[in-house]
Length: 176
Image (cartoon, rainbow, N blue to C red; front, side):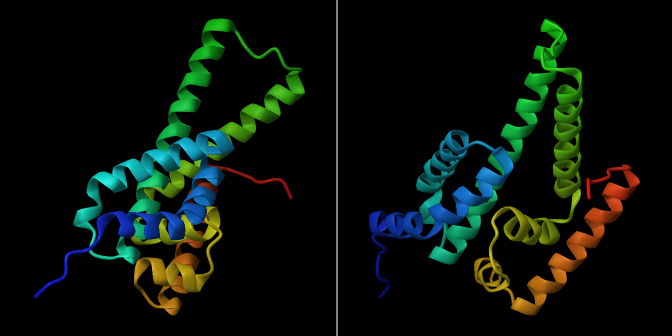
């Protein structure tokens, strides 16, 4: 006889456990607390609609992190396109040229890094986002993804190597 799960309690437990990590990941990508909170809430709305399909809290957390990360990357891409359109229409920037150049370079670098991350295979992309944007430990990543700590370390190493190669090919240089 299978016991029916209390969906409200399940949602509350996943929310309590996952929100801080999800917020950290989304904030690193979106760069703004209010936006990060909105994106997290959108992810939890989607989770609420799909929670019955997720068998346990670990799978739910992983699902939420993936959805939140994707929503944040989509937001960042949209913001870049909107900023470019605005600059074209209004012949921006009004900032001093040196500051404007630095801001454009920073925006372009961020976009190139995000594009490079999005091109990684899913297994590498997931661990690097959780490690670098979510600031999770190897153990937390292993628990979230249901893999060994050793496997996480190997994937993070491979993801970093691949990103470095891609960024080198794109001629992206970071200040020392």
